[in-house]
Image (cartoon, rainbow, N blue to C red; front, side):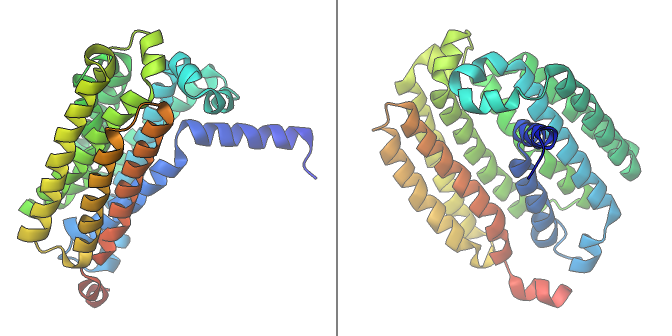
Length: 300
């Protein structure tokens, strides 16, 4: 049996894990390594990619920066989250704000240290990334459209660190990046619909608050159509191996998404749509394995 103190420590650990979205960071780490092996450094042996210390440092710097970003975002959104996600917020509040802020600075410091192992340019990259996340959380998040676009850019930024490191400027890399950016943009808009109650209460000028739910749904529909077109272009014009199975599935799910979207009226409906988009993103990460397993096996 665990003692009361041990239970308290365990609860605080889960609280901090909830704040930094540890499961999201794990997905990003897996995505960065899979993208490195299959897309960014597909000309190198798998072993050399996996044992590349510079890549490890970039992944660790990305993870620390993202975790710190979740903390500062949680700090600024604590009142809104109490309205939109009361149960999660109560868990998050088991760790004090001072402790969270201390951890925020420690994580950013660790990110810079990891980046410094790679190069001075990497340090500048992550310093700008850290500042951009803070500025977004502090100022831009409450601005309609600007906040959504910046959030989507910040989400895909860790992949640009790997992209720049390997210097792979093939068109297929940009095609994948566009598809991911559009998916994340959809997720940001659906999150605004899901959190409209808290945004209204605290005067967050999000797209649904400023323009209404119908306009937001129209914008979501346009972005969804662009995402579908992007997926079809990847299948028809690029060599993506068996990953086309994922894009077929994604296109079908996005059509289902649009059907549900226009019938949605409550937060639970938007939560379902949000989870659908998360499913597509996570499935996309692991579907990278389908690009060409035979080539990877030959590169081990």
